[in-house]
Image 1 (cartoon, rainbow, N blue to C red):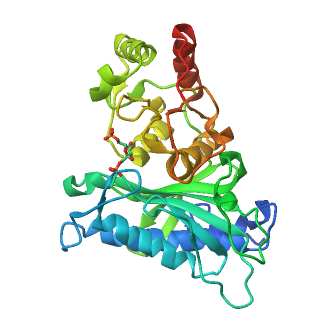
Image 2 (cartoon, protein in one colour):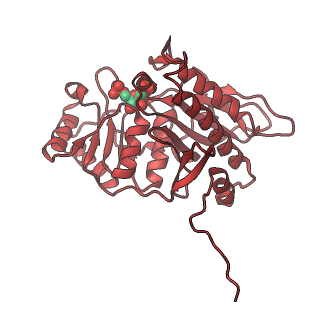
Length: 341
Ligand code: AFP
């Protein structure tokens, strides 16, 4: 009698997984597959540099400010460059929009290629934490372009609602390096095995808890929040919910994804429209969280995925996390009835 040996524990690399899932895409020509692989390569290079940040003279402020008024650090610029370079590898990316750049950038065309996609990213979110060895992340989103692929890209290719995203994800450079992404068919996570230099499938079909006992908000701004938000935060405290705030959105959302709860960045007096960017941070992470069973809304109570960006660097308020916990927060806002943007 013959036996077929099946190794259920065998390693599945990110590349293999992406190729296997290629047929899930609406336009399955291999273009999106190639783009995801380009992002995976960039993530490995950025990871290498983040890991040796304390050793080389790449750490520290560059002194410049980005369009959102944040201080830009050298590693942000490095990560930005590497993503742009890697996204040119396959020739499938028509252009990019980056949190670090004022305007979108058209990428040079490779011969015989007609790129159908644009990529938006925050190359190194939470970078003010690098000096103190705290986890940072890369956030990305991929849109199918609206403009005629035979011509140049336009702002409309980028100013699309999150519900048009064809893929999105993040890379967390933490105690281990993890790449989490979705193409609209669930969420999967891959841990970088440094010994073989590959992202390996480690978290299959991630589903977040329906509710959670953690809330994540910069409570230092408590007095700058609207009264409804203060009431909700008082409620979290009354209920003995645990406060966890790293100040690095990818890390904070990653915790919520696995342990449940809510992440909030409300409007403050300093940021009346919220601080976080719709295009580079909120929409891609909303796609991931919704695919894992969660919810993501603005504090104007609109689904983040349905908000059409008016500009590349638009800021937005956000409440994102476990569905029941976000709904509970929403009920507080409704009860005390204020509608910020
Ligand atoms: P940096 O990239 O400047 O560190 O900003 C990080 C961030 O965009 C996001 O990752 C955090 O959740 C948020 O800002 C922290 O903002 P506060 O310092 O105002 O709480």
